[in-house]
Image (cartoon, rainbow, N blue to C red; front, side, top):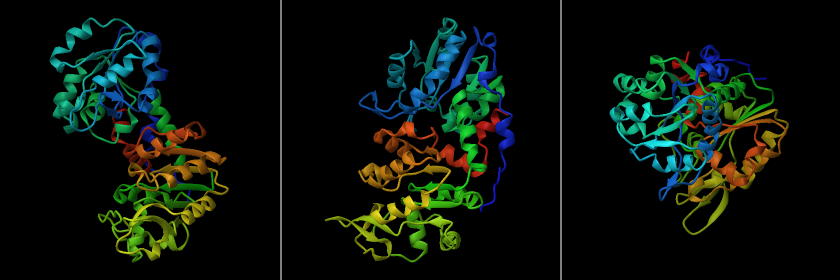
Length: 388
């Protein structure tokens, strides 16, 4: 039985002050800087996936009910795109304003904001100070409000100004979505057994700290997707044209593969330019490209999940963006049918679960991708530490 470990970092999470425990009278008439992650996919000027927006609505509604003057802070992408489409989508649900002006021009609008009012500021990343964690930019943001609330767990692994520097300048609280993320994810540190961790995706480097930690906690770790390729490479397999993250070697983990703590698929769905077929991973040719887990691998995963009391899943099993989502959908269905407590996270993974219509069958769906992995690896995040 793996060692049950609470890990470091829980003290920070337990010391967070929660917005939900703050009396409404403490919020009425106050300018509340609400950090959300409204970095949603947009095509042709329209929001095409409302998952993160919908998750944030209850927090906005509670602040409106309390009579707070809510100023929403968010980012969009890395190239400085406008949050105007998000503002339009938000405004279709609640009466919310949008301020595209620079910070120095925002104060007049905020003075006119009534109790229960809501405004969304333009993309924070249009100011280079946001990603640099600038103290000056954080100070400029702090001048807009009386209270800071972080309900953006999914960006709290970054020491950006609005996540790490800003809360230190104002009375600060964790929003309900943030608290929900932490309380659910930390269950993985002291799980019900048997506990199965499924790790997929493309970047092996980002999964290594999670693997190291959960080899001491999980009963079985199932590795799928392109991160499995690093293991196949370490075993000396021909991988053809398959994607491989060569930044970190999987050789230190091969002993765990041999003793069954890490389970790899024995076959793969491969494309060779003229056909897509299932092949044993030991039989790939130089012209082959692995695009998804194979049928035998799916059955192996099904056996690994049998009897599980808790399942944690992050990362698709194949090249989901290129249409190879069969394995990922199969995993979603297996977990949905299981009686285990289930947690899923990661952008493509959550998108796949949404498309299956099974999202309500999961006990918790995390908004975090990188933040989820960082928290699982360390038990804390910069955004958590800033709220301590």
